[in-house]
Length: 78
Image (cartoon, rainbow, N blue to C red):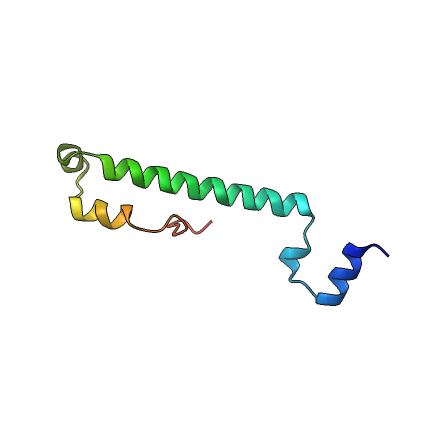
């Protein structure tokens, strides 16, 4: 029996962690990409001028609140 099977049987890992490694890596990669996108969008929002904020119907306070959220705080919770 290989070490991977021994580890899975010994520690009773949750089902999500028993997925093949490429699947876990893919999920982690997608999560990192999503977090990077959220951080980029929030930086762009923070860089908008007051005239642009008025055009989209947002106040500076709204944008500051959104821009200060941590990158992992995903409103879509994918």
